[in-house]
Length: 221
Image (cartoon, rainbow, N blue to C red; front, side):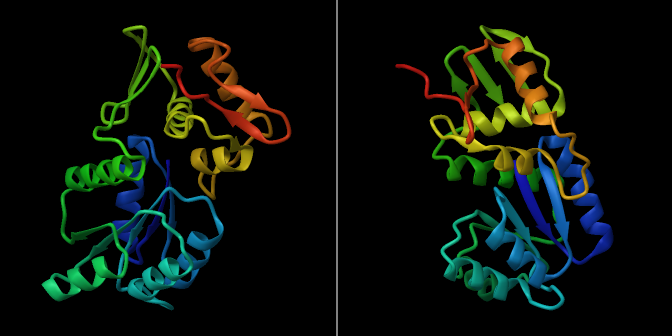
């Protein structure tokens, strides 16, 4: 899952990025509102953490502009503005959640998981697909009741595909979910991850749609 973090405080931004990436997120970090608006409008982003007091364009302006464009990406406001009026204004403008600074990282993680569940229409975090059970909270996957050890990006890739069963995901969408802007990506990295997942589960799990991308088909009832 790809998160866009929009925060101009260098220390807080670095702390959040280093804390969230081990939780299975790809985190891209921007420090001003103008760049954030362009990124949210043009790129594949699963969730946004948005500060309000930003240079060049404040967070509330970004939020209003994004929603006017019809972008439905979940947005969590992270701010020190603590009045009820500020909260109401943010939520009415289209924010999906509102967390005050200072905050506990455990609470932030819980709110991110809740937003992900709501966005995908699930009541709990676990994703079950046939004999596969993926738990984002514990970063674990079981297949036929046996724990399967996955490397970080293998887990992230499987998570993205299972979140979107029945949908063809393009190579670009998957790479943007796995890699941040500063990451070096080898030309065959995605294919290697998919090959490993097929070996660890079963070959038919991930189907290749030539010229388009990859799909995990919905499990048969």
